[in-house]
Image (cartoon, rainbow, N blue to C red):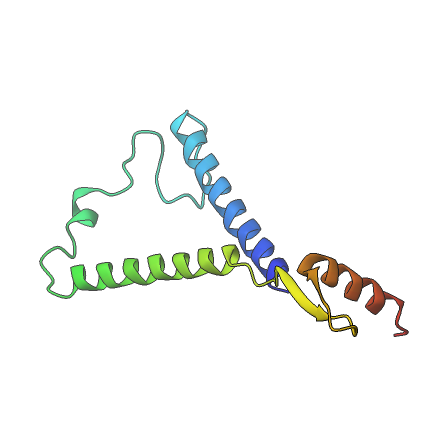
Length: 122
């Protein structure tokens, strides 16, 4: 389930970023801007002086910006750790019944259980 959600989320984020980046590149290279585009054309800046300095003198602005960016970084790190963490057993010690123990690889046990579960009636 986590894999599917992860892939869908990554796919959506990737498509949005490619669409935005491609449209900015196309307009920068001289393509006509669509009607919904925020800026007029190739020579228009993304943030003019008024937009860029609008909140500069407000005391709450920079702490809010830093807090939001910190939360985004923490969420990205949490996601990275969740994706990279291995939650599988490497090996399992099994009592063979004759006072001996055998070591079974976790991947082999996983495959055997998956195969056996596939043979069960639904």
